[in-house]
Length: 325
Image (tube, rainbow, N blue to C red; front, side, top):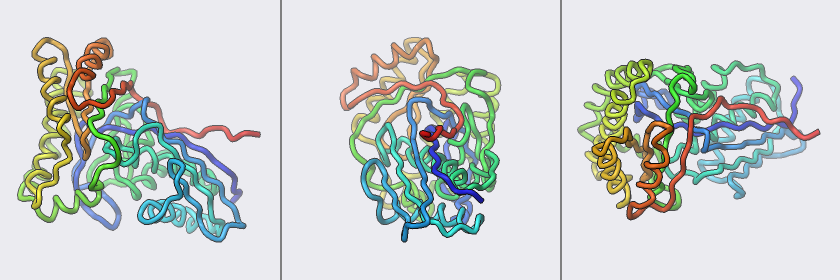
């Protein structure tokens, strides 16, 4: 198989129906089904260059040489592809995000989706989007969804994500209120394990999340934001409830997080369809109609504790970027 440099771009996704917990840790299979919206405004760009002269893989993330677990996760994916192709070439990997990394904005999702696509291409491995999604999932479960644009589902115990609805079939926007700076103190993998092992509410989360996923999927396919929005909020709050009940409590909220949620409720009471969701991090993502973006953005910028606001529409599939001649 021929080897060559390859660059891929993938976009972060924000789950509308949340995923939290593992069905099988060794294969990184999610315990509950999830459904997400891929975002155009948050992207990762990753370049992989196989080089037979290298003695070890070289990985640079956001301008810094990777080490520890960050390096191990990248090398593990490279090793998997090398095992499939029979290649002994190490690789030089350079990846960057145009949004904060490891801060609760799904940078691992876009990063590993881009890495999966770039790596399979660089090592000459023929791979379908489903193959790339399964490869990305083994590094980060949410990365399976970032291989696809629009609305995407990843069912529990399943290898790859699947598209549910194209973005243009139900155009919505997401307004993101950044309420803290720097990386979060507890990563998602560690947080999931802690919740699984210590939270008495984790069993209730597992029992109720699948039915809520189906309700969210049904509302999405009906293109009904008034029905979809409250379900999205419930999914996020159910997930965080399981974390808050852990011992000790796993609290990702910043002071501004609750203020933003309150402002969103006030907007809705005044007639604006706006609904909040949060991942394992302090930032609040607000799902709304494109025509309401300006009003929502303005309202969130006025909330104490909000450091910045970003606006995004739906994002596209992960894709390769032409290499320079």
